[in-house]
Image (cartoon, rainbow, N blue to C red; front, side):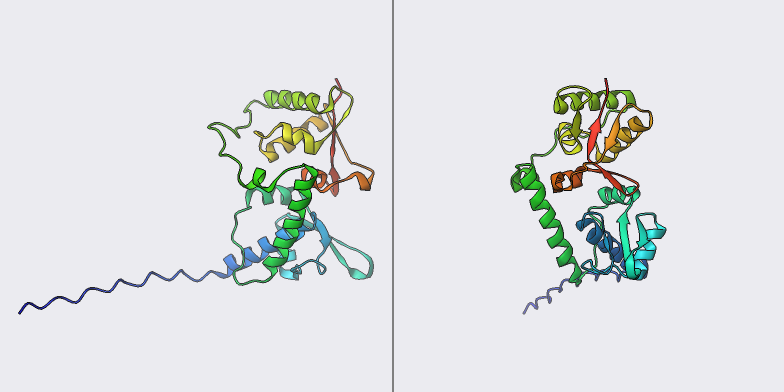
Length: 231
């Protein structure tokens, strides 16, 4: 009689290592940033959902990602800095706290802004989520600063129709899809410092759309929505 060997049972998969305290704190800080960015980059810390607690607020201030100002009755007003906006673009895929209901409020705020962006740009959701894969080499910004400035001037002319006219930043960005946002922002700021361009704010609040807010360049506490280039 031949006895069959008992089949070996598969070993249970290794359990993921528990997160360290630093990892958990970093995830809370990331969620706090998305909550503030979902409110347009500024808001009262205790009015946001989820509320930004003192520990997260202090850590984000220390990292230079937000600024804090006290308003009436001791209310704390938070504003995302230029460094914070740059950070956000590079950390979109960072992990968030698990089993945290605050993420639902953040998602709702971002979806509301996404809806406004799509409506303002007359876009469909598929244009954003089902976009074709970039061509090889696409997305590479010109290595030569002079070449980048020339591309900006060409895009400006395409949008404004000539020099000494206003061009909305949201329209300029659409003309330069291959240029990384941070590279474009840095180039425009440098052009302004060297008096080759001017970045201005839309004064009429009613005229400012969500697309304008999303495309704006933050200089200090002021968003700039307009580019003006003289010949």
